Amino acid sequence: MKPTPLNPLRRRFCLGLLAGLALAWLPGARAEQSITILTQQDVYNDYIRFIGKRDPLTLTHFSGPGSRRDVVELVLTQQALHLGGLRQPIKLVKVDHSSDSYSRFLREILSGTATLGGNTAWLVDLQEIKDKIYISPPLIRQGEFEAGLYTAPGNQKALAADSLAKVQKLTAVVADSWRPDVATLQGLGMANVLMTQSWDSMVGMVAKQRADVLLAPFQATPDMSLQVGSQRFLPIPKVKVGLQGSRHLFVSRLAPNGAQAAEALEKGLAILRGRGLIERAYIESGFFNTRTESWQRLN
Image 1 (cartoon, one colour):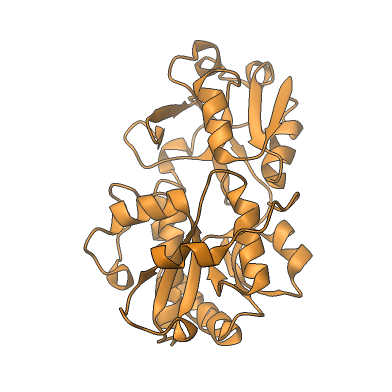
Image 2: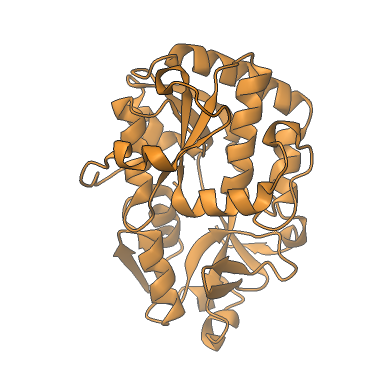
C-alpha cells in the first residue's frame, strides 16, 4: 500500500528535473527560502482535484472528489507547518510513480534535496534512517491501519472469498519494498504472494487477473471502490486486514530549515490532534471507514 517501505533503493531520482513542475504558494519566491514538500505523482494529481480553488490551510472537512489517505495527509502536513509557526513559502514537488516511488520518496528526503515528505511512512523504515531525519509524532497510531483486499470487478472467485480459508487460496501481489504489506500477506498464509517493484505493476497485474488481490486502504466512494486511472477495483466484502506499526511524517536533517520545519511540524500536529482534525481527515477520506467496523478482521 502506497506508501509505505525501503529495500532496495533504486537509481537516484533527479529532483532538479522536476523543479519546474513544483507548485509554489508564493510566485517568485527564491528556491532557497522555500520549504519543499515531496509527494508522489498520483497523490499530487488527486490532491489538485480535491483542493480545486480552495486554500488547503483553511480546510476543516476532507471528503469529496480526490479525497483519500495520502491526499489528506498532504493537506494536514501543510496545516501543521502553518499552525506550528512556519511562514516560509511552500513548494510541492512530485516523484513520478512509474517505478518504486516510495523508495525514491525516502531517498530524496535523505539527500536533503527536499525538506520533508508530505505523506507518512512506516516507523520500521524511518528507524533505519533516523540519524538523517527528524521523525514526527504518529499520524496513524499502532493498530489503526486497516486495509481491504482489492480485486478486479470481474474476479468472482476473489469477490466470494469471505473467509480466511477462501482468501488463503488467492494470489496476492505487493511491491517488494513495502515490508509491512509483505509481512501481512505472508502472515495470512496465502497460497501465493507475488513480488513486484511498483504500484503501477500491482494495479496492472490485478486488472489482468494475473493476481487476485492487492492491499489498499478503504475508500470514501459509495461502494468503497478504488479508481486508479481507468481501472476500478472493489474490496472483497466482509473481510479486512490490519497492518502492524505506526506511520509518521519525516523531515530531512540536511535540508535548509529542516530543524525549524521539524519543530513547527511537531507543534502543529499536536494542535491538529487536539482539535480532532487528524481523525476527522482519516474518517472523511474513507481511511478510517465506519462501514467496515463489523467486517471480519483476518489477522
